[in-house]
Image (cartoon, rainbow, N blue to C red; front, side, top):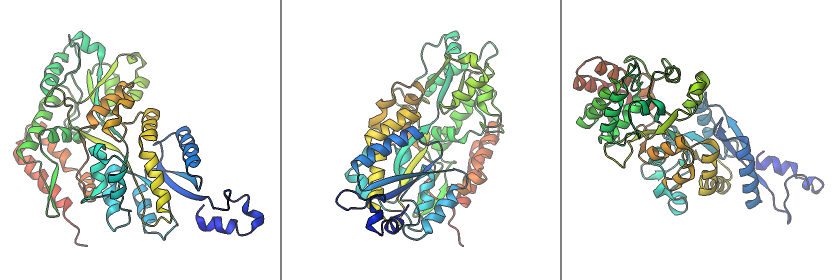
Length: 418
């Protein structure tokens, strides 16, 4: 209920006692927060609300849960609405922020983030997509990313006593695991998110911006080295070169019992164990290895940022909610409750007790997101990276195919003339 409704409700002194009036006559007003379905449990929201309202006695919190399907159009619509008619805080996917920055409909939170919110220790895969130029519009909330899920028993049978720490060790171990009818790794040919990490590790990019114009960069030497490593790793298993990790779902392939490793988010093990309960206690996790010991590989970071619409009629209340949700106390609590990676590298120790989440946190310190442009959705709509990967894995010339894919990316990222 917005302030104007409270004003109507409390028009008479007779009704004031039941309309959120605080001692001394001040009015308690509502801050509305849109969160995505599944991002936070009801128990977490109840505990957060009780704590927040105790410390902000002039605010009543209202959480409204949204579905991911159709959310982009719904957010655009509410951002265009009149003042006070929509939510005051919105959870958005980290790679969606650039779509909402266009048109100037989000509140610039740069000063708050630099002064009070520990910006220097934010996960880069959440912080960078929340920026436009030097301004911060999206505030990191939580993250998740891929790790290597592995069969501890198959590693032991192959004489491997610990997870690999470098990419060279990873290749050597995976080759050892190809024995007794087992696949050392199942890696689908079009898993472009995993490829992205290898490209970033080599110093390459999917696309780069110069003077406001984007162009695909898969044909740079660094990006080609990332693809070459992907090719060598993928060849150590029997993953289909013409499909991604969902075709067939790799959880089912892993559950069949003949695969030693997959690259996926830790939560996928729930599906694996549902399909094959005999694997309980046999699964482990480690960060995607990097080029050198002591530094995990780069990974694509998924997750959410919090934004404040410019049409909020309570910017101070909205900022207070964002500060609390993304602050150390409740961000740590959210991570522990939901098995997420906290929004800061300095909070990673909060999830040390959960093997899969700890592996994610190690990788998230070097995480990245897709190129920070609203046009990137056009790239993914008809993804040339997938076709490029399939062609190279099928034996085509990498340089030629990378150049072709880069040209298609450049075309998709070109500014619309309409």
